[in-house]
Length: 147
Image 1 (cartoon, rainbow, N blue to C red):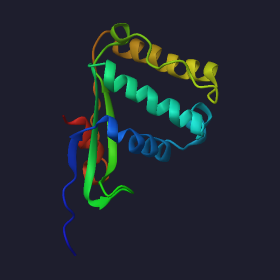
Image 2: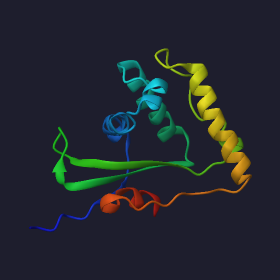
Image 3: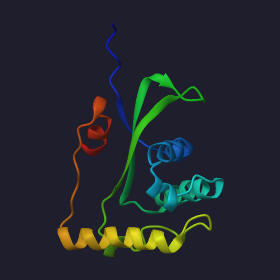
């Protein structure tokens, strides 16, 4: 049995956005997330464009990816197996977390959910910045958090 090639950490680019969107909608497919982010062309376009805007205009947000050099995507490039969006700003520094919701999304429910996350983060962490470390299968998420 051959040893798999190590996974590789790289910065994600604008060209990666379609693959990042596909990966996100593949992974976050539970009923709760599907309610907030229905898998529709409009919601996918919103997601891609929101991330494009963040990549181009928010220097405190960093997108990183893990690629598997042994597998290829439909364009023949190394397949992205994980990615992370690091937001190095506090809520009061960055302003609104998301652009206006797409019409396919339940805006009030999205506001309630993400607003609740912001309030819980503030209650627990106060003004301290925080980061998460993970150690999942093949260490892809760990690599995303160990930059």
